[in-house]
Length: 229
Image (cartoon, rainbow, N blue to C red; front, side):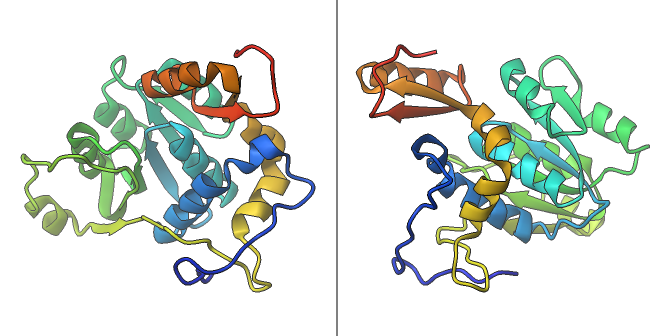
């Protein structure tokens, strides 16, 4: 486990090899790296990432890079299409019985680790249905309301470890450098595929498209006068 900096301390300069737009992924990559650390992902693990927005895409990418077999799940096909590049399997919720599909893929056993990156009661409950006995559920999504129908007996009976993954501070390497920068430099071309850039004049469209899920990661390019994609 790499250390984190104390809250509010430390200033870091973006390396010259990382462009301005890609650097906007630094904060979510830090969160994603922390989530994968909290999940203790090991080579050969089978993991599910529920929710393939910007953060979920990064969690899936990092889990795969760590040697896991990754199953990505989202309700929106534009997100699963992008995630298919770094996930072993992608499933579209709403068109597929997610629990049945994951159990079929794992021969009824379930997966080692589930990353819940949506923050909704439905996906929270799914996580406990598809994790194996003795597996781990990592809560990455932000929940705006309680899950009223969940019975903690499931945690006890399946011997599940449940952890949260907030990661509010930079994770640094032994040289005192943020891990996020190193990961960006190594995987920049792939990770740029989740970004859609908007000129400042289309800022409102950027917010609307992000909210609707039309794009995965909307970024306002202050130096561009081009029209939005």
